Length: 236
Length: 205
Image (cartoon, rainbow over all chains, first blue to last red; front, side, top):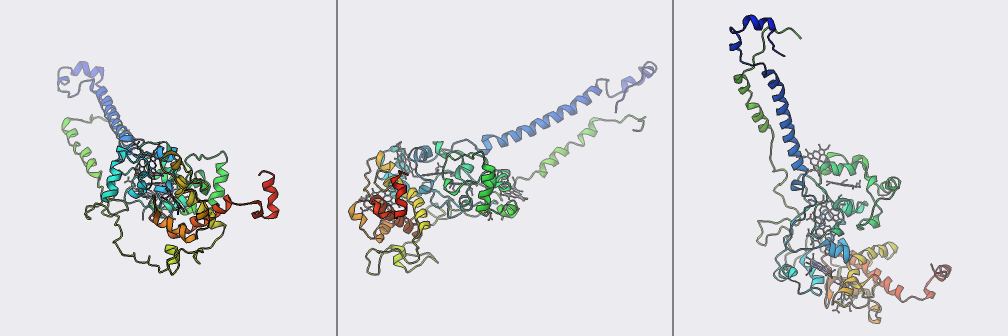
């Protein structure tokens, strides 16, 4: 909708009406540019918010958290090759993998590295019975139900969800646990399931024929794919 | 589009009337977090209710949880009625290759770091540190009754801590069975191999 006085009007009506006009001729341009700027700024704000939301600042992906004891998975799992279950003993049996009891650390550290100052809180905890308060790294909202045992027993390995834990000194999140990520696998578990004896293997990688092998395992484990994307599976 | 004779008038007053619109949008955006953090407890959560600050409750001393009472000392303590170590697996544990395969996964998770892959006491922790671990293949242990091993896993012995809190009774029996199999395997002779399989060993496979 443009408003442009004709040249005839200009000459005859000049002086009488021009001064009464609210908008100068450049207003046309301004009215085109200002909405554009507003739209761009709005888009920029939205993009920035999305960016912040997806940045490690919010998702904590790759950001190691400080812990009361600088416990290193790289040391204990990568180098000493201790099985996950030695410390996360319940992972195959119940919903929670859980954190090791102080006693579990002490089963070794009452004998090895007994003088390490880094282990002071562990020894104190063992004597006083006061638990060590680990900072949680992976945490789902309370309206999501998750269960370790079903995944571990159906050939979903730790490293598929938690990444190469054996290469992390201080543990960090490997992905943000979005619903889309859960669903990606629940729609097509074939791409990720592995043989049962490889679940705790940190180095396992899908081979070239994962598609065929995965389909075979999904059938073997009786994975009920058709119902895995129902809302009530995770929101109950 | 119809010819507009009257130009549409945009003026400041008209625009200011729309200023509440973005504000209204903000009202629409809800930011409740009470579904994210519901007032319920999960294992390992901290607690402000209990004085020691943890939600996981340690069992009250000298009590047994409901449904966990079993009066079967053979299965639960590895002992016979007179308190001596049991010499057989409990009747509800069936010795077959599944039990041994399962026992192997347990052994490799819970015992191998110290006792080594074959039970020779050369696990990686033993190799690294000042901890010396005895071999499971000494004569005394090869002739010890199964209940003795069950007791060691449950209560520990000397410098070795018990694993009762991490390894449930049926898994302990699976480990015992596997340890027995390891002991046999380390002291086996060719006569223990069925005749039709001996060729495999002699051919170096």
